[in-house]
Image (tube, rainbow, N blue to C red; front, side, top):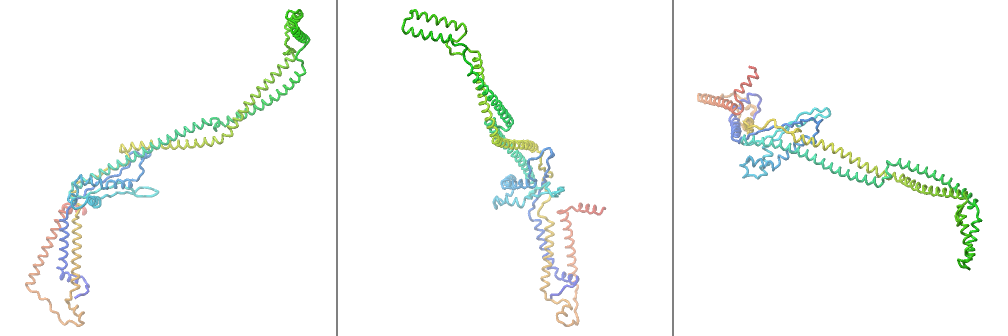
Length: 519
């Protein structure tokens, strides 16, 4: 009969009445859990701990050329090692999963190893940063589970060695790549610098007289040429005035002092020509005339006078002519000088006019050269730092992975977890037993107490007949009690034995309890 449970006594009554329904499922499920704990294959876990050590050389002296964070680099290395090729190599090397190769594909075996048997955990610590406190990864652990403790230890050590070697390889490759990239960039910039220097040299050669640094010289030369031209124009004007003056004086001065003897000589020559036209050379008049001409010529020569009459003999006329000729020569010379200076002045003026355009082109080339030179100097400094950092990485003085706790051969299996399975079996068994008992009790319509009968019928109970216990009942009850006591004793002994052999040695437990109690 379904009735409400109001106190602990009624609970105990129900327990005594339904003890078989409670203990049966509880013991069955607990036995299943215990059998599973001892029957399931044992797997051993071996773990290696790797510390991420900072570089030995202070960053103020040598700056590493690897700027990625440890977490990022660690994830990259983890992806490389957890890749199928690496894991296949480990599986074949240690002959792992030989019992699964006939039932599963290699991809499925690798996936099982990656997801179930391999464990990767990072160890973080708080970073003291006044701006933004955060956590940084300082170490990580790699674990592997296998049926053999020796295999678990060997694979864990192999994986930890792979992490260390892959980190060194990745850092050296990245450092070497940085150095190579900077060297190639330096060579490119150097070639560009040589080209721009050649362009500057060609530009300066082409515009050698109009370069900006010659502006002051060209301006001074232009001004000097202009002053010289003004001075020469003044001199030319003065000389032209003198030329006019001497020309006037020369026009008023006779070229010869006396012309009588020359006129007589000319008349005698005319007469000789006339006589020769009529008479022979031996004719007396012809001979006489010749002798007179010769005598007169000797006279003129003796007086240093021009016989022909083409050259003046007046000293004043000759002096004026000489001075006039000198002035004309000076005028011609000044004209030539003026022509040369005018060409020079025009040349300097053209240089000054072209100078802004040339200066603009020249400055553009200089800006390009200076930018390239600045970039080259910067790359040169970075390349030197990269070479030093690369040397530090080759000497393994940079940030590195160090195995601080190598994988050891596990002494106890990691799975199955016997205490956990037994505890789960016990909890599930008790829960199942209570559930079965509750179902049975809720479906039972039997009336077992006078109160229940009164509540059910509404009539009072006149009398109750107590349970009659015979001697056989007492013997049977005593026998069951002894069986229960013996079962409890065996259970306690089994529990102590299980605790001693599978969880902790009883001597060790007693020592810990004594230490806690300070006995």
